[in-house]
Image (cartoon, rainbow, N blue to C red; front, side, top):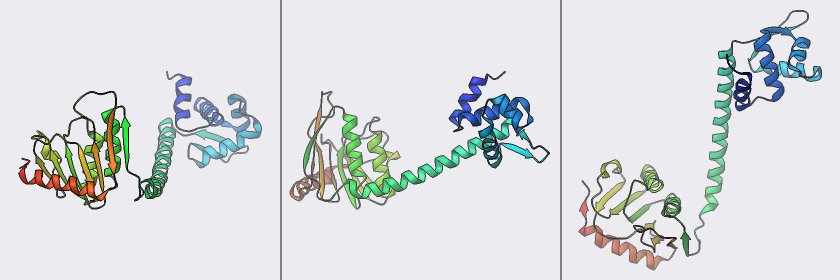
Length: 251
């Protein structure tokens, strides 16, 4: 037999109030009853019971029977919980839409064009990769990158996939032959391998992001620079082009 506390916990997680839960639990036991009887059994005040019952009727969880006096019948348990789950799903979809709208609004102001050059220190490689991925997500036209992709680089891999889906042209020079390169290849992604030893990206020929620490070694902190400085971007792009010409096409 299902414990009452367990049922209360599930109904609470589905968003019901304490009075709604008491009313439903009473009706699961009574099956059908008049409002005063439900109020007494559930210990929901008489001043509130009719509002609670009307709300549950509107949501399709119970049925109002037009006897004199009125009686209320609980729907079958599967129907009750199924309806509540559908409500929860709809609410979540609505929240997702609101979040998407807010994210789009915030994105317009999150990366100003005149962002200052900066050197950043982080405690883990993953923090660096998250920031790098965030910067790449703002690319509009093209991205070039020196990188040594690893299994743990999922934020960066997801970002690169997003760039190509948005028709941003991406060129990646991987340090050595990548064993699983085929999973990354797409119409807008070119991928070659060459020993370069760098972790650096340029974005839209305007911004350069360069790891100043060796990411292949464990350190207490990692440093990287973000430059909105065209001469530095040009130098990095020129070096990239020279390496690209010598590199081998990924198989």
